[in-house]
Length: 328
Image 1 (cartoon, rainbow, N blue to C red):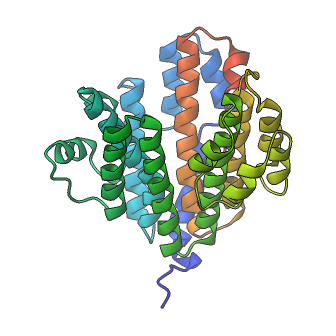
Image 2 (image 1 turned 120 degrees about the vertical axis):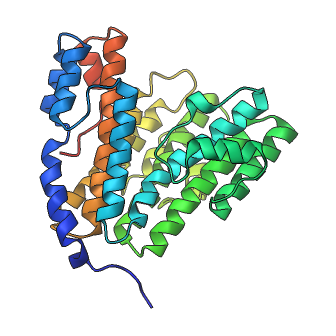
């Protein structure tokens, strides 16, 4: 028997999200932040979008993320929708903990809040070999990644184990929620990860078996098709979907010593935004929650890019060239 919530169950939260979308960071607000006289003036523009500008940027964004997740968990008919966006923080923390442990350092400064599991408790439980309160796939992946690091010392292999588990948990949750829209987002996320891997591996001159090892299952395009593609053929493999433009650009850059991948990375992210932005055309339903959660993640990334660009003394046009399409 299906336990899927009906779209009408989302009427109240969808109406509230439509109102909250008016405070999202628009392109006009981003331009004002880029052109602001100083950091203080840029932070005041963030305050217009509901951010607490009294704290520093990191604390400001961490607080905003925690508030968004809590708000959606409490307001959405099925709070598990939020978990799909939290999972990546747990796996970031897993990678950080394992690498720090391998080097004998403390990972605390690099751990991120926002996941399903408290980062301090995660680190404490892991170092005491008493990890509890986490999913079985997460615990198993951490143990396998630790073994891979101990046996071969290859952080790339450990990352791959954790990445497979991360996307696997996202896909499983999307299936349990019986959400075609969410399942499509996870499949596209896997396609993006695989396309990026294919381009980077080609630039390293290490295609073939190495590429097959790093590709993730669960995308719309099979790992076999991606691994068999060479050069311009990479664009052909993705030509029918949202990643067509990114793949065409990636195919041109997929040779050792090629030019910067900045534009390619941007197009990959823009494909995800194009998919999620379709939620804005749906009056009510789980799609509005999913779309809003993605919009906020996109916003946090843009804010970091703007402030990092300003701190580095980059001109406005250079900062703009690094920004992704906006949700609104």
